[in-house]
Image 1 (cartoon, rainbow, N blue to C red):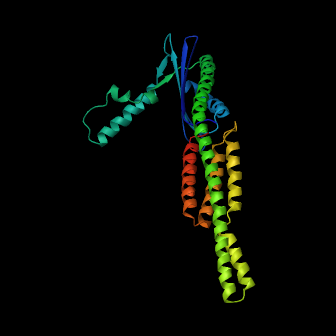
Image 2 (image 1 turned 135 degrees about the vertical axis):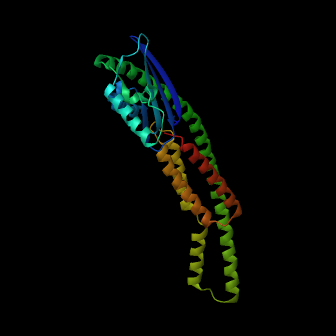
Image 3 (image 1 turned 180 degrees about the vertical axis):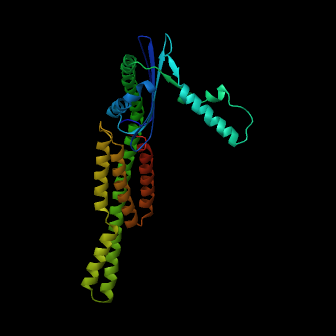
Length: 291
C-alpha cells in the first residue's frame, strides 16, 4: 500500500552539467502530471511523463527540472525584430493612453521571453537528457519509498479498524438473535391470548410470522457484511494500487449497515451501527490518500 502524498529530490552532475529534479505528489483520483522543464528539454516532455506513469498510477504530481552549467552559461541572441515590434506597440499604446513618458530600453527588456533565446546545440540537449533521466529515475524511486512509508502507517490504521468492524458485527449478530427470540416469544403469547378468545386464523398466523421474520431477521445482511469485510482485508494486503477498489467495498459495507439499521429497532444495535459507520468513515478518509 502506498500513500499518494510525498516529496523527493535528486541531483546529478556530469561533464559540467548539474541537474536538480524535484517531485511533489498530492491526492488525486487520477494521475495528473504538471511538468516544469527547461526549453532545451521540451521535446522530451512525453518521455518524462511516460517514465512517471510507469512508476506512479495515481496522484497529482508536480515535476520541476532545473539544469545548471558549472563552467559558463549558454550563449543567447537578441531578437532585434521582435524588439522593434515591442517598441512600436508600446509607443502606440502610450499615445492612445496619453502617456507622456517615452518608451525605454528597460520597458522593452521587460519581455525577455520574446527577446532572448538560447543557442541550443543538439549534442548538449542529448547530454542534458541523459543526466536528467538518471536523476528522474532516482527521484521517482525516492518518492515511492516515501509513499510506501506513509502507506504502512495507513495500512496499520485500516487493519485495526477492520478488526473493530468485525467485532461490532459479531455483537450485532448476537443481539439480533436475542431480539428475534424475544419477539417470537411475544408472538406466542399473543397467539395464546387469541386461542383463549377465539379460533386461530391460520392465514393471519402465517402472515404475522412472515412479517416478524422479515422485520427482525438480519442474517443475510450480516453474512454479506462478513463477506465484504473479508474482501476488504484481502484487498488492503494487495501489492497493486487499491484505493479505488477499497472505496467501492466501503460503499457496499455502508449500504448493508444502513439496511441493518432500518430493520432493527433495538437501541443497543443502533448504537453499534453508529460506531460501525464512524469506523467506515475513518477508513474512507484514509483511503483518500491511498494510491
